[in-house]
Image (cartoon, rainbow, N blue to C red; front, top):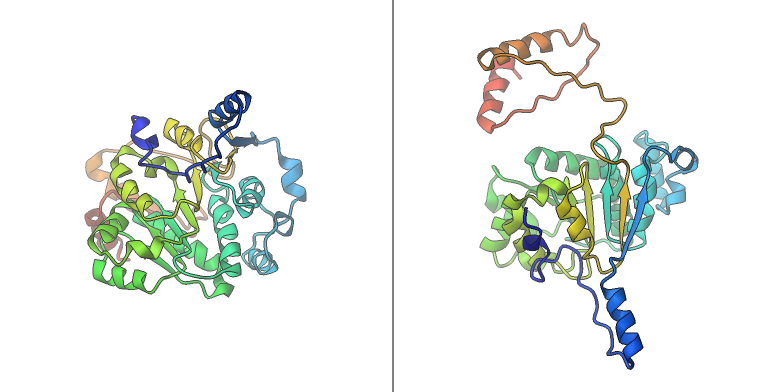
Length: 323
């Protein structure tokens, strides 16, 4: 993607820098120019060598409220993962954050917990907007937010395609605490209903989950519409499993010294993930799927997630499997 399309002045991902007072000398002018051209980025790289810190750190040490610490215990989260250990304190400190960590590393809790912590201190709607590329991810995020914010009477709504827009608009007008949306549907709602954009005028947090995919060229126009409705002084949080040039370029625009946490270099999955694949003829893949599912009990597998390409194929599989 052309980076200039994402980093021009009319398309700010992060909040814009505040204007400084006019310098009184040539020396100070030169110093300010150098400072202005220097990216305000703090980077921390784990590279699997940070085991000492993560084994001694607890959720209480990260600055979270007692209710959040207790909720983590009830959910079986006894110790924070590396991405949580590094990112939660920075988010609580008001920093823009880009977290790069593999799938299954606890990225969702890394931004959900500090957002809920701040929401508990000053509850209002709409407090946070989370943008994610697919409907499935949106519903997963909503479930995790509701679980982590169970004691807050959290009002969280999902805004995705394929659902009734009128009902979605009515739900947004009730000002839920958190909105989790796909780019296309939130764009349509913001453009078609003039009462909806003002609801986001005081939003504290913008999260781009799976940021590398959200910032794809196909979502550029949608994001332009979304950003225009958000306040300049928001916190922007980007979390992704892969690093792209677009993320690097946008990170350098942060006005409040962005924090970049990198758990690894390149592509990596968690050690507990076992991956296998098979090549099969397209016309018999459903038969192979049925066979594999029938062997789940013998393999000691209790549940499975099946990813399909279209809604139509989903309903066909649902009918075939008698769900």
